[in-house]
Amino acid sequence: MSATPREHTRTYFLGKLAQELEARGLTATLRAYPPALRISDPDTAMLAETVDCVPLSDGWFYRWSWGEIVGLADDPELAANRIAQVLSGR
Image: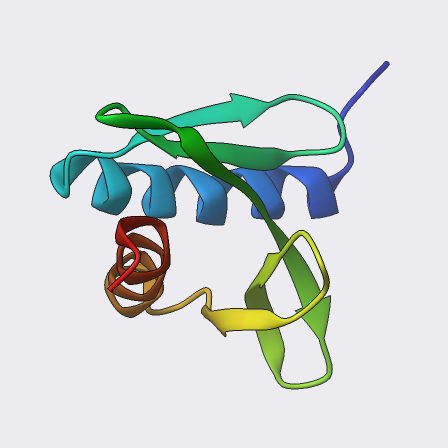
């Protein structure tokens, strides 16, 4: 199956987020289809979450698995901080 331009954009933004998460000591694994990140803390394997990236009227946004927006995809650093905070339980 060939990837669409939308999937390429989604994967690009997820790759940026994965870099930021890994810099914070988290593990981020890209799921191919549909593109999403499986994020976990290696020290607490029970805590894991899936984040995807969706286009909305105001741009591209990272989104939790339950549909709530994490943050703007143009700011992966801020989104990674929010995700790390949730996974750390602080």
